[in-house]
Image: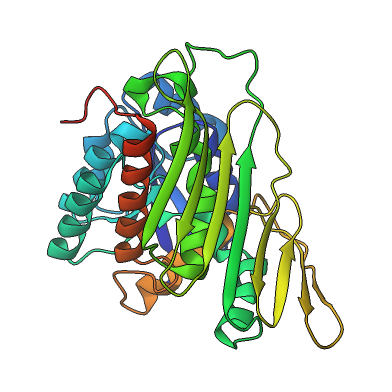
Length: 328
């Protein structure tokens, strides 16, 4: 594929940031934008200089020139929109969280594999330069046996706007799905699927979580300690500590960032690579790489791992008492 042609489903702020970053890649081009309202699609397409605007997602997915659909709609619509694109023969990059729960994730994954189409959760952090360097250190055993992973992601949305999507149970609101997905995915990146999950949360008056803390335990003795909140700006730092050294990631750790590797023996190693754009270009590059190599999944963000993370999130929500009204 000389050029990857994108269709954008959804016209919110994350879609804008992604389109901006795609402009940095000469072999990627956005050719279509879709919304549930023609006016919204046309306004977005005009502003972002996208040649085609569709007043329905069905129309966009029927466009024969679209190679990949980027799903940037609110959380509860991910399952429908991803399935629509896959069944129309399109490849899919779906915003995080991939779906609302593990059952929905399994349905999308089954469809992607049945259709033989590429599909990936848009966990952009995975593909940032600092995370790739961290992966190399982990794979080389530079930290020894991993004992502790610590990560937080909190933002201050005060006073609470209970009309906002973040507080709306019908839109999959709450700290966990919007913000906590980052620490959870980071722990999975480092340690894999946990053997035990312990969670504590405080709910808003609308029934979604305002703050959630999680301890993940692994049979080898490793722990991950993760926090997320809608009520305060946390340090947004992360660290990995092993028997032979530790990695300290600078704020904001889930964006393209810098870090220090401090070995038990030897001098500290500093990694700092200035990012380009919003940091979303790297996941698009991964999509392009996989498509050109004939891969239907990314080895860096596999569908099995996405399902594992969704299963962990389900267990956390069960423990803290968050259930969305549209769930069975």
